[in-house]
Length: 327
Image (tube, rainbow, N blue to C red):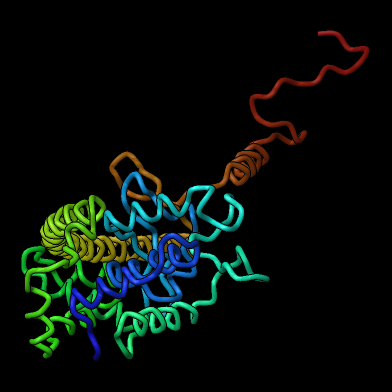
C-alpha cells in the first residue's frame, strides 16, 4: 500500500494553479481526497447544496462499498471553495448543480467522470515530482494520518465513519507496517492536523459519538431490566395458567356429578310413569293411586239406579206431576 508523507501530500495539493478555473477546481478535489478521504465517485456526486460553509462541512453521498456521511472541511479548503463558488471564478452558470463539474467543452457544467480524478491526481503529482500517485493513494494517506494521530485520538468507530467503511477495515490502517512513513508524518513541517481538517463539524461528530455511546449503554441496561421483568411476568403467567387449569378440572368434575344426578332422576320419573301412577300425598303420608273424576261419576250413577223404585225413579226423588192433575 503506497502512502505519501504529509510533506508530499502538501506538495501535491499546492501544485495546481489556483488562479485558473481548472487549477482551482483540481486543488479542491485534491484537498477532499487527501484531507477528507473522498473517493472519485464521491467527488463527482457532490452538489453545491451539499456544502455548508457556515458549518464548515460537506455531505458525502457515498457509493460502492462506501457509506454516506457528513465530513468537516479544512479551513484552507473552505476558503478555496468560497472563492470557487463566486460568480467570477466558475466558468459555468452560477446555478449549476455540481460542485466540481466538467470544464472542457462540450461537457462544461456536466457531472465530471469519476475516472478523471485519478488521472488528474497522477498528472499533478508527477508534475510535483512524485510517481505512482492515484486517488486511492491520497485516500490511504488520509486514513493512515488519521489512524496514527495520537493527539486527535480517533476511535476505530470514528475512523470508520470518516472513511465510510467497516470498523475492521478502518482498524487495518492502524496496523500499517511502514513505520518510516508514520515517523516522517510526525516530524515538524506543514502537516495537516485532523482537528483542523475536521473543523467544527468533526468536533460535533466526536461529541455526538460520545453521547450516542452513553445512550447505548443506558439502552443496554434498560434492555437487561426489561428482560428481567419479562422473566418475572412469564413465571407469573405460568402460575396463573396452572391455577386456571386446576379450577377448570374441578368445574368439570362438578358438572359430571350434576349430569349423573340428573340422569338418575330422569330414570326414576320414567319408572313411576310407566307403572301408571304418580306421587301424591295422603293424610298419613302414604301414597294412594288416583281415580279419575269421570270414573267417580259413573259409580254414583250406578248406585242411584240400584235404589230406584218400580217406576224407575230414584229413592228420595220428587214425583213428576202429570198435566191435568192437581195435588
